Length: 303
Length: 162
Image (cartoon, each protein chain N blue to C red):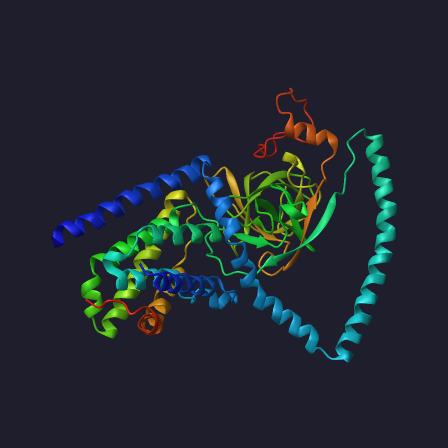
């Protein structure tokens, strides 16, 4: 009697385990079960907002407990900052005009700045294996898959999941993330991949003869038409040359405060019509142009 | 399964879920106990042959969605965890407090090991040794979980003792 009962449990566990393994394969290799994920993530939205509530309450308490003197000094400081920003903005507008004129002379496509939408990270203690965070804006606010998220100092990542009220952001430090970049100084092109949460990024497939130095700023190149062009990704902090290896190992420190930023911006509509065409009408034979629709472009192939 | 028991189970999982994902500082986050696996283990221990195996699967899928891991990863780990508990339920229930702490610690360590193996197979091998620190804190928090839930059980549900 006891024995029969025991085998019953074992058999059921075995069946369910096989089912779960099948689910893992289906999810990891084929993305067949995205519906299950979507339904569950919608069901878990209240939990995600509830978790953020204490953090939000502490923020609110901080503001309401601040004295008038503190607020006044902060106000003065912010006004000064704004003045400085506006002065630099004047120069920027001038430079932008100059830039578009020069681009017109070169007959290259003009840059489009895109629209920005503010979003907030929902605080949550997730397992550190993958670098993902949850934002408080979803498809109801116009967030869509593949949109890029930046903070004040650089690229943060891209949107990989959307529910009506939340969205999921894959940080550039995730091993699944790859960003086409170029060296700001030498215009050398390569790809930055993540190495895991709170670890430096890595610039991959860079030959030893390439012009990359420690301290170089790495910016998005706009290749692949996923990330907008010219946003800072990170600075090169270490270059290791290993004998016998064809490529150098290059560490890049992300510009964006991946672990600390709570307020971020979601960028949309930065693509101009040309790049959109290239992205979505891949059946049309492509002309060699800077915007190549494949994300994993071989770095340095154009050189 | 009575209505009251189901309600109690639902609330225990809700509270455990809130505690599991409660935002804490970076240095503290490795010490956050594995609340949900502990509560699953508790119910497997208490309900024994009335324990439904679909429960750990469902909780695991929720964990997968929250963490953004491959669907089924946490579900499989929780399933195996509850299997170990169900197999040893009688022995575990009779064990002394200290022995229970040690055994639960090993159980959570086993759970985390399964998770890291799956991650390794997928190719996300990023787990460092501090990851396993939470099995220690989980073990230490176990007596309190069992005391609180035992109390609730006795007050509201009147579980049939064997």
